[in-house]
Image (cartoon, rainbow, N blue to C red; front, side, top):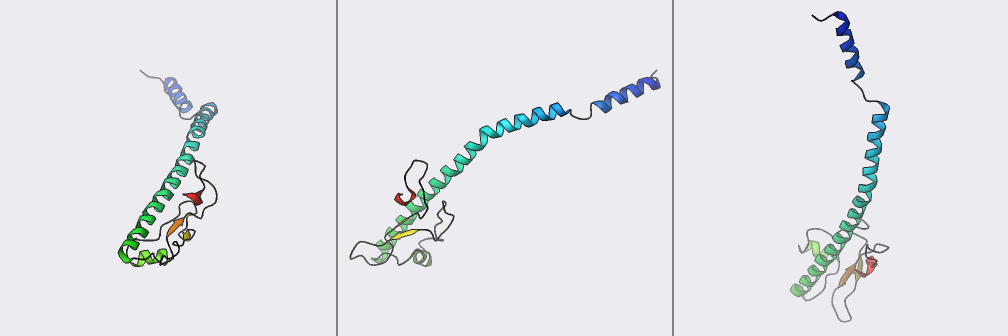
Length: 137
């Protein structure tokens, strides 16, 4: 038979096991902090790599589209908007470094070429992760 004293003892032990001690919480928080210091730099590096890759791909596709426009019409487009109007592009390309569609630096065709957009470059300042200027991509 269980006495009232034994029941009180069991309840006291159960109450003491319900929470975490301050030391346990500090240990868990320090482990989380260590994991974050290892993973966050890799995360931000991954974002930079993705932006550089996206920029190179946007430049490649837009340059191909300009060439296709020239092949179809015999002249270069007057603006990037003309490529969208004529359904060569679904929308203006975004420069992922500047997060803008208006920061592109447009290059005019060589002498004798009709149109205004022969090539384009990123208007972002600085260099990519390999040290090459964004303007030279």
